Length: 345
Ligand code: DAH
Image (cartoon, rainbow, N blue to C red; front, side, top):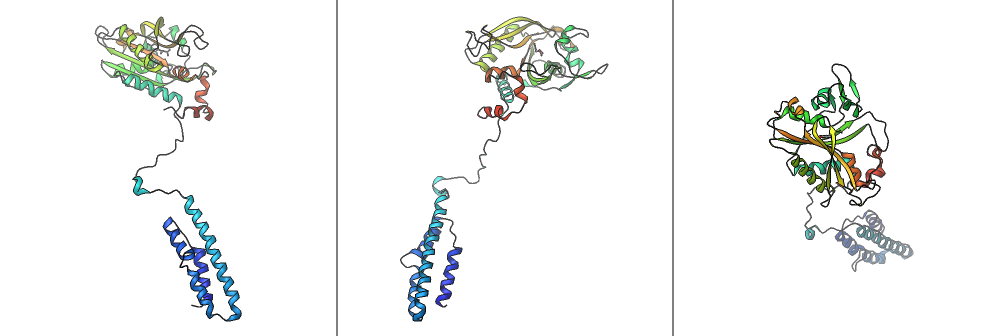
């Protein structure tokens, strides 16, 4: 090969040189920049070149040597910028699946629902579900709302079909109580979380759909003391160990006696603040002993069995846990709101 051909060959080798690790880079360095580099041979060859061409070839070899050094710097920078992982030392298991970036967050209502299910699961409650489009029997009649009873007006219903086969969007999850009682035998210990609908104008404090969680416990000798004990456990688990409860007499067609549960204000701890309207207490849920007429409607012998029930709003619990005052935020899908729940689960 003539000197000219050798120079051209080296030139294209340098341009095409690739390295993928420190070892390749070192090989490159030895070949072009080392003590026995490839250019030494070329300078030897200069001796045999005609005198008038010596200068030109000498300059070409010098330039080539310089370009091999520049290329070395480029390749070195490339290797330095890649992360070095010594798999022999770190014992990395390359077959393990990648831990992905969290690209979303649980919805606050889903977080609360999950927590409530876990709290009640610890004391033996299972989860049951029912349809959101319900008949009159399961939403009203079996729950002791007689046809013209004014209590039906307490819940503004969205009707889907009026008349004999009346169908409506369920106004509460108490309808699931009836379905569970019809389809299983006591002892029954279940909670029913789900979406409910009411024909209300949307505002910060009312919405046409929201979420409830219903509880039902039926067995022999179930008493009001069992209800109180269960609610006390629930309040301490969800709002903190120091939380106090109180029960106030109330009215629901399907429970007798009926009560409303308050918990000591989670914000001011009972001292009085604007969230509890300076009363020290927060209204949380409705409850009571299942009315014997409701047991009988579902073919459960009310002389043998008794039970308690309770129903709470999931948005209400989320409001107290996360201080979300406006109900509309839950369904607006505003990322600025939803992103705040990224670290929760
Ligand atoms: N269903 C009632 C409502 O939507 C809440 C409720 C009150 C449920 C008392 C119950 C209960 O199970 O015992 O307002």
